[in-house]
Image (tube, rainbow, N blue to C red; front, side, top):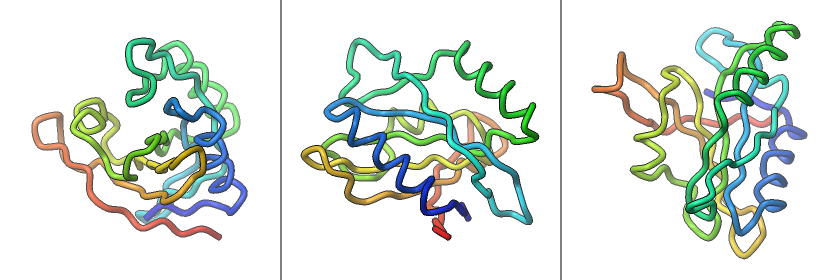
Length: 143
């Protein structure tokens, strides 16, 4: 399960609206608590995809390392990632699956329809390695 505050939920959805018609992307920071990922902050990231930013995203590795270092200073961990799907469902794609590598993390997708955030879903990346990884539906609890 993924637990996050209303302000974090609203912020990641707003990020998708702001970057429409391109995909937004960012990092979920927080802690693992008895099988629940608890979001304590978000880090917006730049989408470095230039070939197809309307339906792909990439976070530059240097930016991700910087986000992770700052999070550690606050005693937070990377517990997931989020991105938007402009004018497409809030469901993971084959590309999302192929490019998901952080096992045990949440992958949140918000469908942004005509510039307005619609449905937001979360998926946990399960498995033991790249060969058996799966994105499975995950409950979102907004508190």
